[in-house]
Length: 169
Image 1: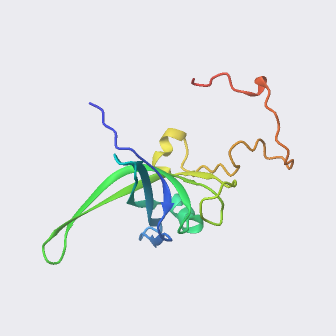
Image 2: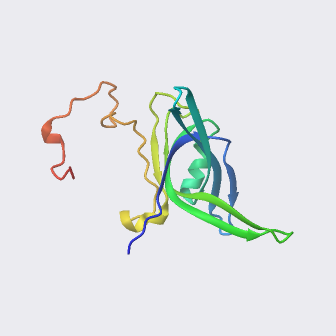
Image 3: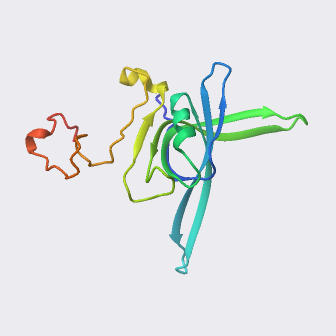
């Protein structure tokens, strides 16, 4: 039977990433993301719950995290849940839950914080490189809907002939 371990988070970074490097020289970035849900209780009062998620990236995406991710920045992360277990010096068993990230999308402005401006960029970790045929992170440096990379700032209208015929829906 097949199984799935997939996590999708959209939230704000709680602190600047902690960067370290493995003996192999590979970068590791750790940071936390806050996700908040709001609802109305039975009496009509607004309720709010914020959950904190530990996220870890390894490799080229970790280097990008170290350069561009700052406290307050809104990010979209995809990855899998990992549970680390160990015994501390006093013999107490400890457990840590974290998200091993493999896709990162930076949302909002490049200066941090959630902004309605452009600047959204996506990066994929090399762990899933066999699916794409390469291990280089993919960046979509253009804001969504910005058209081609030519110097003109006026939006172009798409023609029906400009779309691929193999759209999956």
